[in-house]
Image (cartoon, rainbow, N blue to C red; front, side, top):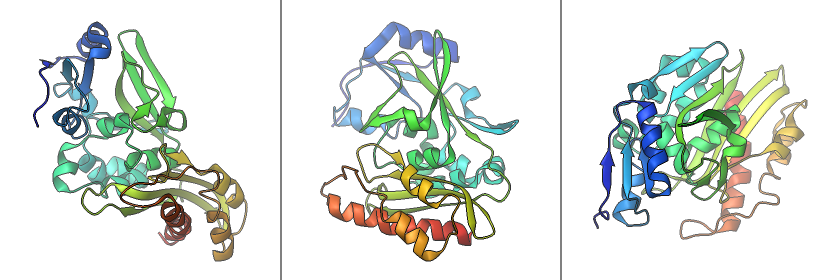
Length: 285
């Protein structure tokens, strides 16, 4: 199919993009890489009257370290995140997740901002942002605000962004020395999306867990941070038995997705199994 008719705007500045969005209101969609928006438009699941393409905004293509914060612009591609020395040195989890997304064509065209704002419950980025304690920056004609990743994802394809806002970047704390991280997912073979994906950031003192972040995607309609599992492990020895016991509760109270790719029961099983394995992977990294 082809999209319904729409007006196409390519602003030269973020201020102009925000002004165009404010003028168009709910009738507009903002495009970064287009890998999420364009397929929905072709299927007519999205029919914006106006598409605002951010491709000329080079200020959103930067990766930089600002004090204790790693900042990634919304137009940075997955491949750029994967290969960036700044990312690998300051938050290796993000580089590992970026390298697991889709295929080379997707990684070279798709952007971190476009993926995050789309809020697909099977996307990889939410797990990483949750585990790393990230924030997203949302900009409108009235200014900018930051929203914690834990408060940003609200449901399937639903986030805390307002109709007049543009997601302009992602920020994560620079990982402390000794932080180990991994991302483990069971993927849908055709698309590469996560049936279940587990991101882990981990610090230890000897065998004792001093801090841990666990982000879960694919299991439920909303990505989430597994705080109960984290609380059970933090301050304890990371023995195989302790890890398995804590991971066993990762799906407790979760309304697991049930679809053509996996039943809710199987997703919960995969989440328990792969949470334990991801923590073990992080320990060995």
